Length: 311
Image 1 (cartoon, rainbow, N blue to C red):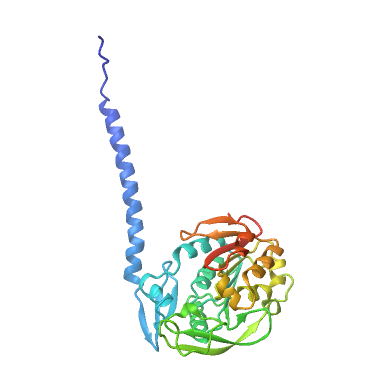
Image 2: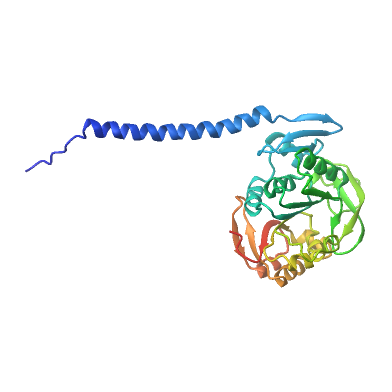
């Protein structure tokens, strides 16, 4: 029986293979050094500094400065210790925003999304942040200014709604992300944290931006159940913005408390020609029927609404 003979590779071939391996190894080392350099510099250079009066300055992951209320045990703690908030959701937001876009951040809180948008749209774009909590609105305004974004990004200390008037905003310092226009006069929340209430202005955004030439590109909305009135108050803006993409919370129980139930919100968005996608915890999106959302009576999820597939 013949035994197949194999010819060992030549020295030249072996050397060539070794050179290829070394080249790939050098490339991987270069990538690794770059990866860890960015993160180690972030740790070394982006420490939080307490400024007094329950205020600290820290850095987001991209190097943007942000002022933080140190009494905030939800959003504030994440910003001070990690430099980020809702990383999967903000990653999706960053994919939606383009240079030169006009972006609305409704329920800006500490301004994470407004700051991201201001950096992404650049001086050719516009960012409008809306925050009725006077303390948080002040922090967002200062954060935009210290980063040099004030020329194209601004804060409106109002609550977007479908009527002009005044409402009570209820919130706690420790849970800064839970401010609501449908709260109660109770002295504390379910965790025992002291609850505050302030008067805030309600304004339809169609009256704030009456220019028929204005178009919206991206909206991030987190207004604790007041999504329906806010959307109804900007119906004209939405109607004349063919490419608008809306990232928003969808919580039927909270919406019911605002006086505009989830089926009404769905009817408004569907009537404007928008389709819906759910957003998962990894920032991925999947199409969902409006009828399915309208039928929900509980739960809380993030959705994306747009007239065209966003990607």
